[in-house]
Image 1 (cartoon, rainbow, N blue to C red):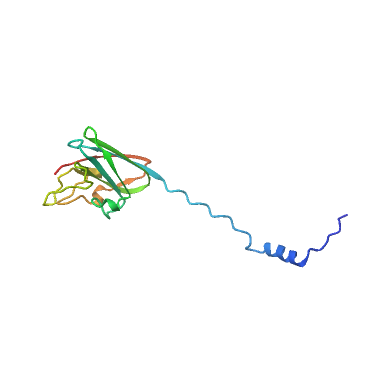
Image 2 (cartoon, helix red, strand yellow):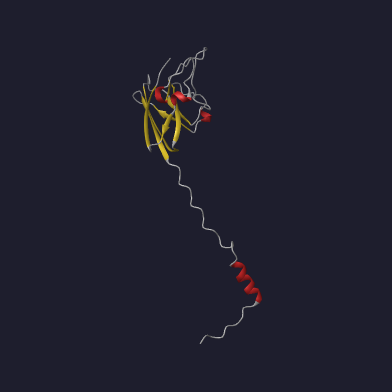
Length: 160
């Protein structure tokens, strides 16, 4: 009824048995974690006293460097000013806590100019229109929790 079975050579039988041993079959791959949601932060900046220079805008995730050290920002850019306004969109940031700092770099030297007393001679601004007392605003005063994909806020530039 059945065809005559021939014995497998010993080596082949050993290999076959080894491949069926417990633990030799790869486990199912762990599911990939869900990607973190990303957000876009649109910053509308208003109140420039003129259209000279550019708006320097930096986004921070912590107090480290905020607001004056843009090298510690998670994103930064320069935007043109037109009719006393500028607009910047930071795309694809992870949802979370942020603070935004703005400088009106009127003379185009890439930094905030100050008087000999350290008082800014160019316009400044921060998210939540945060103001400092005898200095720059704190990260906590400017912090925003951004969870919506298309977050929009406005910063008013001030001149001291």
